[in-house]
Image 1: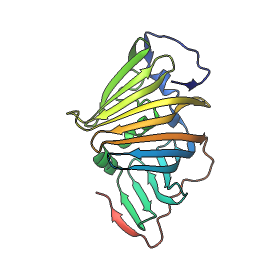
Image 2: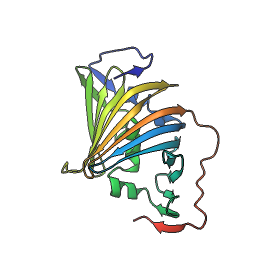
Image 3: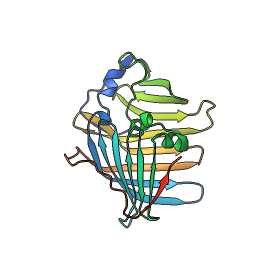
Image 4: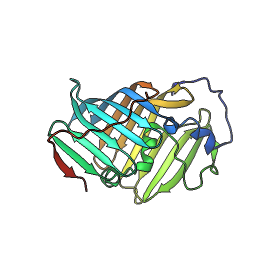
Length: 231
């Protein structure tokens, strides 16, 4: 694991969750100006570009583009709303954020895990993680899902996580690599997501990340698009 940071290397016997949370990228606004996405399943491989604005109160604005630069979909997401412009089919989808949980098994609360952030659980500030050979494992339940995170105790970052159903059949496994420091936070520039239900393998490589500008996060529904409710 290549981590570009000046953090002093340590080998603690245990770490406090507050030390890990300090380097969460979702502690502040940020803007992923460019990311490359490769989606592999049993039959096809799809390559896309993406950008994403995030505001720390929990708002996401995501743009997905084809390799030719044409925007395919634009998504606005908060803890109670999802809006999506389908540019190809001229449709705008509307619904609650629970749709993502029902469809993909990831709750809104779990989304920061995708970026390698540690989620504060029911007892924030009280979790102590024991370290063995420089690694610590933390597990908890978020709703009906089981969350497990493996922490590098030297770097205070998650290097692997998984979200699974109670029976363990449907599972999303995420690995993080090539970490970089930006301001006071550390983020993985390479994110590998494996989803067992659809047997999909998604690789995300963040090419450029900056602090967000003061521009407002605006979602404009497509003109004369067909409106479809997500259920």
